[in-house]
Amino acid sequence: MNDVSDDKTKYDVIIIGAGPAGYTAGIYSARARHDTLILSGIIPGGQLVNTTDVENYPGFDDGILGPDLMIIMRKQTERMGAKIIDVEVTKVDFHSKPFKVSTASTEYQANAVIIGTGANPRKLGLEGEQTFAGKGVSYCATCDGPFFRNLELVVAGGGDSAMEEATFLTKFASKIHLVHRRKELRASKVMQERAFDNPKIEFHFESVIEEIGGNEKVQKVVLKNTQSNEKSTLEVGGVFVAIGHEPNTKLFAGQVELDDQGYIVLKNRTETSVPGVFAAGDVHDHRYRQAVTAAGYGCMAAIDVDKYFSEN
Ligand code: NAP
Image (tube, rainbow, N blue to C red; front, side):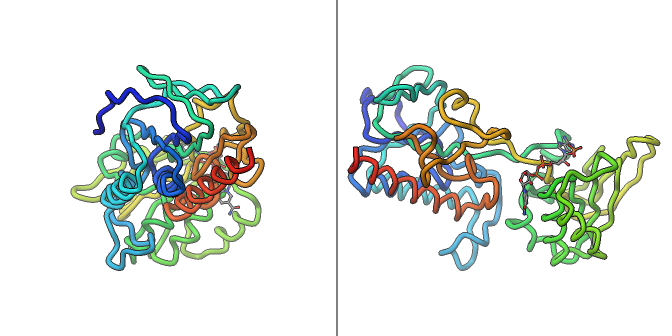
């Protein structure tokens, strides 16, 4: 944890969030010689601190553990000169400049803000989901699919993400059990058809996951049919939960424009509806959701801030 007793409160740029987007924005902003503060939240590092092996972040030929990657990014960001404080932001005021970003104890001010607070995958809320997180329970097929070769897997959800993840996972898995709580899928017709046409995917409609069990790793899933209440057990090696994401934007309601799912709307490249306030990563991007794309957006936002300063 960083020392929070520093009484400096005015910065050129404040970055809220310390995942790949926030750290990369910090690296670029500090290198551009802007006085930069990152308010990281209480658990810095974003979603990658909850993952194990990361094989798809370029630059690590043997892969790297998610938490280790975030420690390296943090050190690099600090070496470039950004100040990082591990504290939760409780309030923002973007109605006038300088913008105000407050924690429980301090009001900070800056002429530009980059929001990189990310999104969290929605959870089923089962005990086994937590017990086996990173041990067979995953929220990202692109990230973890290759670790599940030749296994039977469960994918939970009925939207486009679930169809996409199930279809993608058939490259690795021997069979996919797609479990959806209703009779109709929410996914678009084309995504549904693709999944229906795939012989490796078996659909379990009107079914919910009651239990995820195993020893060291996931070994079984107990399903309950919502109509008959009948239970059945699937012997599977993994569970992919694909029931949507929730962007971390509660703080920003009424401050910047959000879409109907709560994601930040970008107006001009990475700029939000408020000139001078920018967003980077999963907080606005519900399509790619990768560490490398979040880092890319962080870079873009910091470059956009630099341009904003030169023009204003
Ligand atoms: P979504 O559209 O909100 O679908 C979530 C699915 O999970 C729904 O089927 C929902 O069931 C189910 N669900 C939600 N909470 C649940 C719970 N507690 N237990 C069991 N099931 C639960 O989310 P998404 O699939 O992640 O898609 C989000 C957005 O991204 C959508 O606009 C989608 O079109 C877009 N997207 C597009 C693509 C693409 O075009 N390639 C790919 C992925 C996502 P109900 O249907 O019963 O509500």
